[in-house]
Image 1 (cartoon, rainbow, N blue to C red):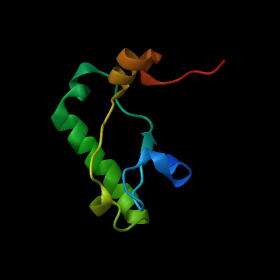
Image 2: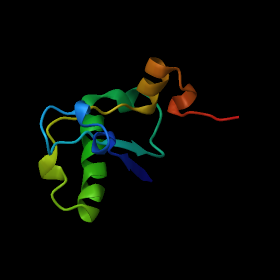
Image 3: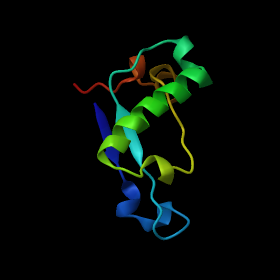
Length: 89
């Protein structure tokens, strides 16, 4: 599952030039573990996600100027999300 949110479509202050956007892609379910925090894994994973988005939004890949990939382990360490996922009770 890929969920894409484009907050700059409502808040232009998030970008430096008109016509640019910030896109957040949330994916599920990705493997948990230290080995998935390596840059090679993260690049390969990002490529696979971008390929799927490209199938539905041709030109998406060419529009990317930067990215940050956070794995479940990194989400846990950075934001305290146990197992890298949020849990609602």
